[in-house]
Image 1 (cartoon, rainbow, N blue to C red):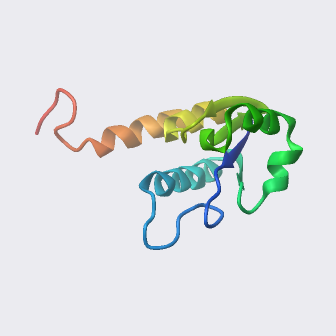
Image 2: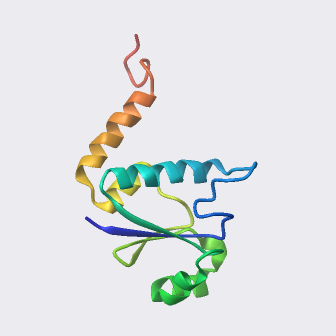
Image 3: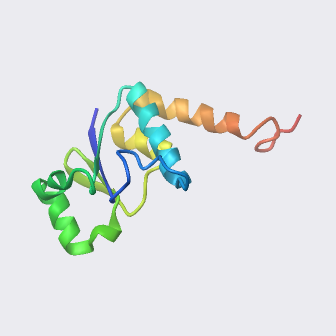
Length: 124
């Protein structure tokens, strides 16, 4: 199983899910992170506004910020290497990046259920 680290842009709180004008992608990603943790995944999040030393002390993240700037965040590391930058991964991508084989099939079932009874080529 891989260790994931998410380096978020400056957010108002640890997840960015607070206040009156909440970004839906942050809500979705926060739910996906909780799901990954319940599935046994190892994931840590760092907020640039609240934990700037975590960014400065990681050589990969520091070099990324010097090259691309804070506007290129979020940055996702898997086992210390850059796996994704500039957007949050989907739940399916999280499962794949975390190396949780059983979670991928759970995601596929979950995605097929969200399509309703008339999804795909079948209809009720």
